[in-house]
Image (tube, one colour):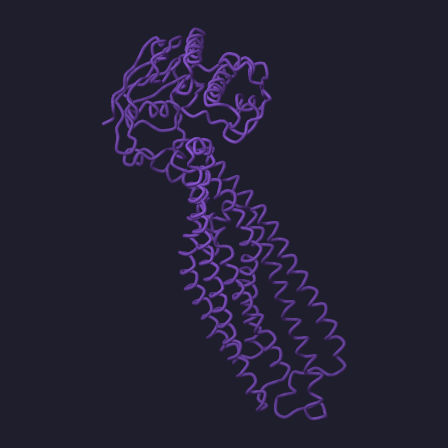
Length: 557
């Protein structure tokens, strides 16, 4: 967990603007602070020096570097102007940070979604939907604290602290030397506290993701839980996990408050040490009153940014933890592409979408796949245009893996797969989204062909479903069989729309009754008769018997 991850600048242009323009505002604010402190110190010296001996002078060097009383109105005017500039630049930094947070979140979400879109669905099969939603939703929203609280203070620390320490050193080398010696104590404390915070914050973030996954599981299975009267047990489970998350949050807050106390204490001791040395020399007349007041006014300003950085960092750790996962998601594609074949052969990891050679039909030529510890194949068979071929075998034998290689989601360890240019496909899960039935059928089409949508619905026996009927999340509002037929209609729509040379169906009738299943079998025959190659994966006897040929696949080694 880095205070400023370079990847943030790489994937979010808004962060560069915040740092660049924010640095200019930080320098302007720092110059205003130095001017304000100088004017206030000189004004106080003008007012105090006459009181010390009644003549406008004092013993030793007390009156050195002091202005005359005639300069007092100008000093006050300049101090007021400096205060206005300081306030305006601080407001501008806050506004810039808030606007930058919105831009950065949008850019990171876009980059992450683009990475997901470019990768194979196989690469996301092991990821929880709730985990992804938490990272891209609540997680990135937590970057508001990072940009509005932490980043402005980090900018001030990088811009203001060196200038302020330099000003102190030029005004009084002794005080400057003391500051240079004691100042590193605060960063050391920040590093130690940051290491302690990292573990606590990571546990809180992991608990939040676990809670999100549990809640999504309960919502998805709520109807089943009600049927079997097990909802009370899940309520207790959610309550228990919510309590654990609350406990993790309190641990983070406890560390935050303690770290803030430690940083304030270190800063206070450092300022007190300098104040003692300045005060001692003022009493003995070895130091100018104006410079002494200037140093004492300027010194707290030098410590404020780095103390504020340590405090604000804890408020932004949740967003940084989420950003880490977003960066991993964005960068996973290049890492896999660098040596995808070796990684697949060794670990069975998913690869980016690959280009598949073109042929008139579907051809598997001595294709062997490695998925984790299992090996599928070698397999050789063809699906010619105008025929329906059923691929059958026990569960886990690799049928869906062969389809994934056909679609380009994974690459064969050996052999070659070829297919027509356009292939329309329906997977095991309907994969419906929130929206209208027509939008789900024409998913991915920039302009919906209403006539083609109606034809697809009628073909699969859903002519009584209105195309503008709105579905809830994950297709809520349809039965399992209806959702599956909508997915088949989507494949048909896509095949007709692109004039696809092949259709692939993975368990298309697992949730259908006998009559609907027979209707789908007739649809597949009709599509083959129109000149398409149709590959069917099924365990249902009725569909298998309707195929022109059957290809058996054994259990993987």
